[in-house]
Amino acid sequence: MKKPDFQKNWLKELLGLHIETKTVATNKHKKDLDDLLEDLIEAFPADCLCPPNPSEETKIKLKTALDALLLWSISAPISSSLKIKLQEALNNVKMQLEADPFSCCDTLQSLQTLLRILTTIMNVIKSFGLSQKVKLQGLLQELQAIITQSLFCLICEEEIKKFAYVTNSGNNNVSVIDTSSNTVITTIPVGVTPFNLAITPDDKFVYVANSSSANVSVINTFSNTVVDTIAVGNVPFGVAITPDGNFAYVTNLSSNTVSVIDTFSNTMITTIPVGFSPRGLAITPDSNFAYVTNFGSANVSVIDISSNTVTTTIPVGFSPFDVTITPDGNFAYVTNSANDNVSVIDTSSNTVITTIPVGSLPFNIVITPDGNLAYVTNFVSNNVSVIDTSSNTVITTIPVGSLPIGITVTSDGKFVYVTNLSSNNVSVISTFSNSVTTTIAVGNGPFDIAIQ
Image (tube, rainbow, N blue to C red; front, top):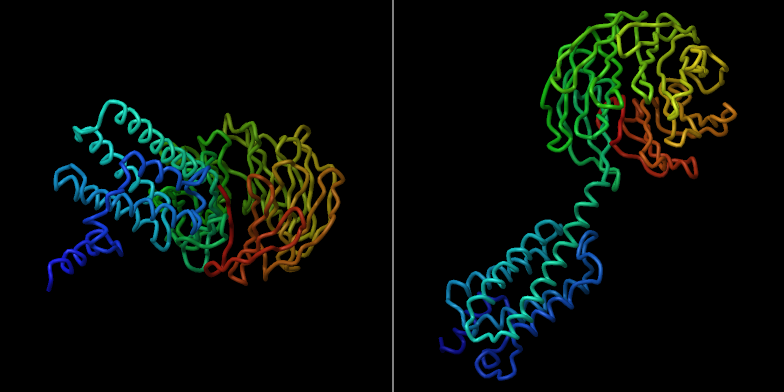
């Protein structure tokens, strides 16, 4: 093989460039490093590189600028070891830009590595005059600002990204749904027959009641792994966490009690006797009281959280299943599954002020963050009733999957998520149109759902 051909192939392998050898040998018009850095900076979009993913046009511009730097590196007045580091860094950025799927984090890390090497090069090339060094420093600072801006964009996107957690009672696990794409991203093994769950106010942990294990699994939402298991009463069913995040309250269906868990130590600190077969529970926004539905007693126990004792009992309809409290704390809404209606309790007097007819076998209920609407899953009707809380009347009914049971609402109030026990999926309802916008397949017997 002739030497020029060998050199040409060597350059292709090393740099990934489709260039002619004579260009490398004879080009007398190569740009200076500062010009090349200006071209690289101009290739970036005006806002963040990512997220979202950069356009194909941006990728092409960036790769062209990187190729020019690779060409410059061949005759750069730097050591061989530094040349190799520079070329590896440039090729790594190119590789990240071409990766499928694209990773914003990996791309920004590769750019940060390239920036460090370019800074080293600026400091070791003795032929740079003072004015050129000042210019290069400014350009490298500008490149650093671009990387930092995109890092902030990435952090902000991760902060607003929310995940939904679904108990699959038939699989003994929890599905995790990315609500931005409405896709299941992972599944977490928990105890036996998980029923209800609740997420701490800081979104860091999920507490899952495992009805057949007589315990509660604690999931770390960062790693999506179980980090603790807490023994409670027999057939734990409902879970609620105080707004300050300090305590988790768990109803024990067969023990007729409520277990109180200290979330700092993840230990049960006391047990509170309530009515027969307690199911749902909700805590007032001020963390002063917990309301517990007693399915077999047709009433609601009100627990004073400061003393962990029942202070009053409120008669409601038959087989009360779930309870939720308005954001202002003024009213509690209770689903009476055997009466096909919802009782509205005035929390100041702890009396029922009205009853609202809904669908057949209403189970769970959620209220939007603005307090204007309540959504009720009707288990036998296969639909969701929407209640206007100002008039306490049903304004519409939304068909969903088979045997809807669990329900939750996003923090912005735009979507309601419903678990369909028999369909093995989750219906996503737009609160603007009050219609199902998508359906997400999950595990067997999805029972409850909560969103960060």
